[in-house]
Image (cartoon, rainbow, N blue to C red; front, side, top):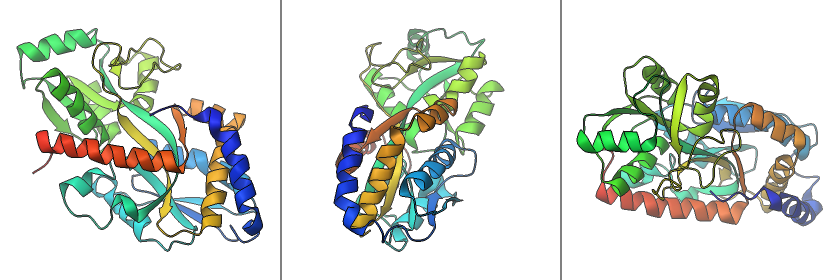
Length: 321
């Protein structure tokens, strides 16, 4: 999840030049952005924060509308993006590794080659959180307890085989730990269960946990970011604590494979300009969105690298049978 905002201005400039010859052709009507999750979740919040800035930088008075297609851990939405007409007017938000894991588990109606990567926008690192009154003050407290009580610790996650679950499996495998996984249909119910004392800990995106950590209702023991996040500077990374795990939910924009080159260039340029927009950066901070721009080639590489990593995890610790 390498931070790459510093490159956005150059990328935007080059793509605007490349697409200038066809700029008058796209877009010439409204655009739909598909989100494979319910309204109010992290991906939906990101999409609705992004939409007005896509409108701003795509121009031509187009409207960008978010359409929620929740179900099957996001798979219904991912399938809808893959199967949409590749004309640039139906695009959508992809979640890595959530859209990749079904490919490993079974044979969904898409592969990673079904999508045209536009840009990654947010990297919401998996974060281990407990209640404010928990006996666990540090990650080492958590590790010591789990080692002494293998399989006894109930830890919530936002879906079986989802980003937080499989990220946490990477840590557990590295540390040779066993817990009882308790899946929920999203971060919100997992967080509610934790606050209610129904699980002892939970794993969720750092942006999803941030409001509750800031308010003091939850304590974040560690995050799977590469570096500490400036909005929660007191939360250590797993890496600095000796566990080299950098993982979470990378959320970005993609189109169906076959989108015209001028449409793709316009979309990439619009996202790149947006990421340099002070108003957007401020809006993202208010929504606790950890920004991480990746241009198309790097975004595609992340998809392939993640699929390879998820396959290794599945081979060692299948998360569904």
